[in-house]
Image (tube, rainbow, N blue to C red):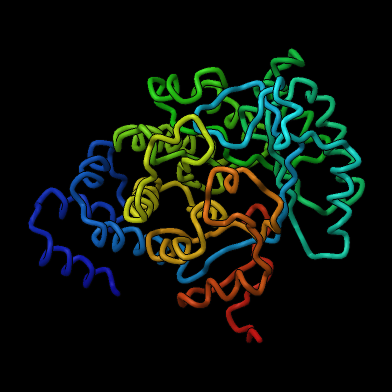
Length: 384
């Protein structure tokens, strides 16, 4: 639908003058303020937000929907931190629990070698913050993985893991990241951001790195030429104000560095954790969160729906609410969300399934690498 037609539709169907004014700013590619975003969030109906978000998505990417071929390595779920929302980690004192694990280096190299005959392009390495696994350990690990498979992109370590590494090694964030980059690390995932508001953070994850430290770590990564992603944990005890504040801090940092590849809202799942009394939000709220992210984060090129967390059907819906990336094939190599009760208890999709999922909602499947170079266009591929 042409922009003039969208504007005319909004003016004829929306009676709230302030909403119409904000929508005109959005559609004319003017930045909206946090106050305007909050008003939009509180007063815009889902279909209205979807129209705005999808218009931005299609203006930037058309029908292109990105995915990559990746797998995860999670060295351990033993962790020194006690995040209330986490269903994944075990404290060191629980290391003998049947759900606790600590992979050996050989286990990790074996996992990497298992993909030697495949066209996988990325390994995603995150895990618990283990007191015995420090900067030197991970530097050697990455170096050895790159020796096994030189062309494999290593996306590794949340800011939480990195802050602990740097502190234990008594080096600056920039020095820490340069050491890892020299070993072969290519980028950072976006985990550990949760919610930046300090009062919320105090209640759900008070003992790990602060909001400021998370942002400083990603700014340091960008300064050494290492791009990263950003996340936001939603659907627990936060308010819309907290979500907008979180995205605004990210938008400010992206203005300074331009180093973020993608933004990934992550839905709180309530199984097997200390916040299980909190009911999960509806799919309607999921769609609103992603739509608002696409509308507000005007300097982020990509909005990603992590399908193992959100589910396949919702991921398809989100492709009309601002999302243009659904992550990768994953290959049943992550437990972070399955242990929290996500629909995907065995998260694995073949490339063919990924392509079909995208084509079934009339979008164009594009395989990308880890920094969004396009590798293959599967829009004309006939699936058997």
